[in-house]
Length: 119
Image 1 (cartoon, rainbow, N blue to C red):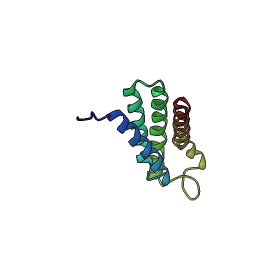
Image 2: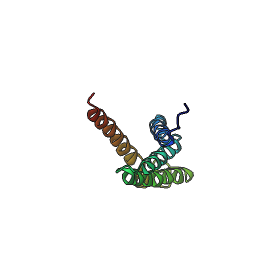
Image 3: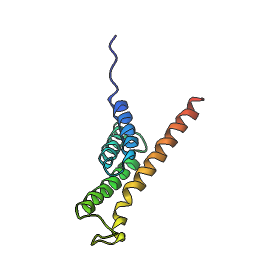
Image 4: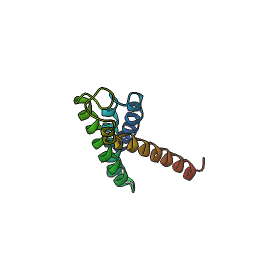
């Protein structure tokens, strides 16, 4: 008997792994976090989960923050001896904030499923 592959589950698990693995190095790992959050949002959308919109908004915030991160890096950074002040760093804030919210909601989802399962 051949089992059908559950692609949404694979997409979801890969997204979670990329979201966590990208945190090892937040600058170079930002691409992994971006792809992982896109995979999570897509998997929740395909499952017709209630929280797919939340993860879609988190994906948008990560895109904005990572875009600002790469743009400011291409300009030579901010603060210190750079021509840009430290205030330009505020454009990067949506990236770590959305990552943190995504991790918190993933942990809440995992603990809620365990409570519902009775273990």
